[in-house]
Amino acid sequence: MAHKSRIGVVCIDCRTQDLSQATAFWSAMLGMRGEIDERGKYTVFDGHAGHPKVLLQAVDHAPRVHLDIETDDMNAECARLEGLGATEVARMRDWIVMEAPTGHRFCLVGPQGADWPGAAAEFEGGTGA
Figure 1 (cartoon, rainbow, N blue to C red):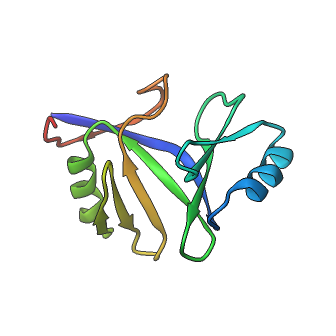
Figure 2: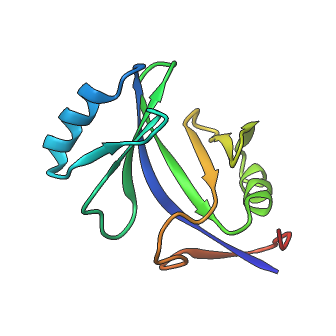
């Protein structure tokens, strides 16, 4: 069984408890209105078309940018990427945090875009889950 994956989100991690200032800056920079979610954890921007989309995330660690990789089979994609040298860091509620051999962190998430699977690449091996 095959599975698919693609870059779905460029996530801008902001070390803050309040995304208001970050949202104001990135909204002006991107020319899109940003809306903070009800938990105050994420800012989603309107006017997004195509992929990847941009998301702000309130975090406790140093600011950085990471990729969210959309996939229709997180377990199969995790196994495939481990075979390429990546390391599983943690399993969260609905995603898996990974680290590339280069030290860059990224997350495996379920399909996020309305156009899924769009131009997602297809890989052999899947769990069907």
